[in-house]
Image (tube, rainbow, N blue to C red; front, top):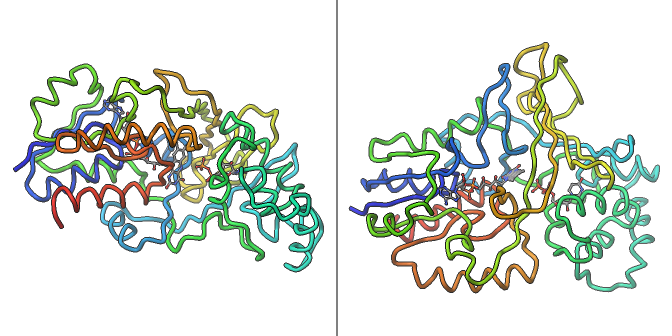
Length: 371
Ligand code: FAD
Ligand code: UDP
């Protein structure tokens, strides 16, 4: 039996811990924050599950992952349909016939497609090489200007000309009247919040969990004491930034409890202009269809900010420069693979969604622990 140390009690670490304990291994989990569950941590306030680190909607087309996560919670039928607020004008997201109709008055898919073709002609058929060109090529200049440019530059702190095209391809573009933000087969919010998922994953007697503990305070000692370390923190921090810093994007969350039942009529409203300093306001009770205190609501404003050491690194910035540096860190990591495995959004420096994190953890489980 192997003695594992897992650094980070987020979804990656918890999935690995659950599987390792199931196979009889002894696991210790240490977590820098004062709670488990990493960025999917939710907490109840006034009968409302508050997503402490931004809106989390589980969506996947991977049936295996969907069945897997359903062991730990019952999911409701929530379908994410955010709206965009551009200087008080409201548009449906993702970009679909409702958006096109409101913006241009077009009614049929053909009219919408013609309008986009007309606007994207400024690219002269050029293959999109950055986010700006990709956006214009997908939805034309009007949507790019009103719903993409401001939001994206606030979110990432870079010009859309310097960002990779794949970021905007996360969003569907549809020529139907369908406001579902995702194309996936399965979607929902766990009834009672996300924290229970990680709690159940870590419930085994073979797993001990310590929060408020930083791996770097006793790195050498941990490496000696345990047979193997699963590290889900920042890969560049692990190597003491010896090859330079990877770039991350951080966020500030401003949460308010209000004495009204319904503040904005939707779980997620994006502010897509460049002046409003936040990117979105979340009204948490709408994730569970208004459940909770009728005279209260909880909202969170999400302000993007530059990351510097000591801040929470919420997003990897996967442009060419950073990905090249990551590859060099990955080479260092591969040399340590008999003692340390790197996983998750920060350990693998990848813009993973929750389903991808579970899938990545199960892949490591397969190699490390056998099926
Ligand atoms: P984390 O949750 O970051 O866990 C890593 C843990 O390691 C952290 O708790 C950290 O404190 C700890 N740690 C780091 N360094 C150390 C150290 N030195 N010592 C001890 N502990 C350490 N995904 C979706 O599928 N749908 C969504 O709608 C969605 N929305 C999101 C919205 C926001 C604002 C953000 C930031 C992410 C969103 N995600 C969403 C992505 C989702 O949060 C991640 O895929 C998932 O939580 C990553 O899990 P993880 O275990 O890799 O990382
Ligand atoms: N995006 C945008 N306008 C919006 C919503 C999203 O331009 O109203 C762009 C933006 O660049 C963002 C990307 O689409 O970073 C991906 O959006 P998603 O909602 O997937 O971001 P996340 O939830 O991961 O922050």
